[in-house]
Image 1 (tube, rainbow over the protein chains, first blue to last red):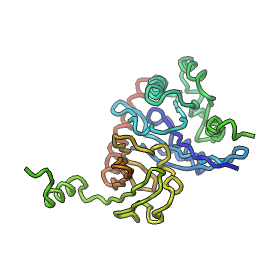
Image 2 (image 1 turned 45 degrees about the vertical axis):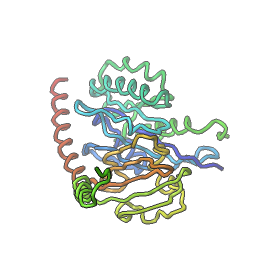
Image 3 (image 1 turned 90 degrees about the horizontal axis):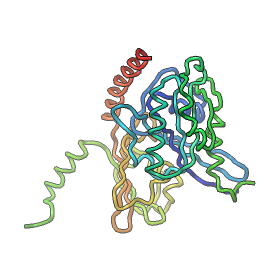
Image 4 (image 1 turned 120 degrees about the vertical axis):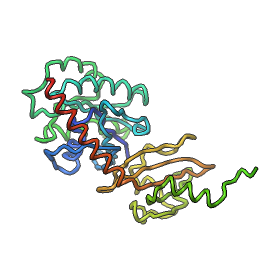
Length: 171
Length: 130
């Protein structure tokens, strides 16, 4: 048995559902009320993968908007990240691409998973999702998630967790 | 001219910089073992952190931040306790890494309220456009 600890960042534009995904995953709670994040909320979740106990330190970082972008200090030392977008809002698709480019430039190639969140509102998704094909291809995995309905929330976090376990630790 | 700072001036500058905010600090050695603690440790859930302990064990939120470089690291408005905002500063001095916790709850809550109003307006604007 081994135990490891990894920092994972939640990244994306404002109001895409980063905090809701963490809240659903860690506490099984969803709130309809939108509360903006300033700075970073930090949570911890233990996950058993084969013979390894992974302590995920989840950094729910404030969302990017027209007035603020993510400071590099928040990304320091992250082992992987979850990139969240809201396909009901076209602007978040563009900002997802920009943010990913910036993260890669700042910390290099770090494993990430892509969350197309709010799948419970799929009838309102915009058509330009093809723009995200490159991101899907370079991600560890991508999921259509709903924090509200708890759709594919666990697999989202767990697929990244598995990618962070050194191959020698897996059974 | 004396390069030192008169104690009254130093105290005055400290008062201005902190603005009455509560603070605490940890000193860590190269192996991230706690070698010093000080300030209002109770206010930051640090009271149970003892000298000789591995810092990343109890303080998982420091994962990835250590060791610090020559340049100080500042993480503003960290929420690792309910309803509290804390600025974390990490810097190195000789062989000790200092982790300083400064309470920022009141300014943080105000900023959150203002940001909430601004983003609610932005979301409405976006919705009208589409």
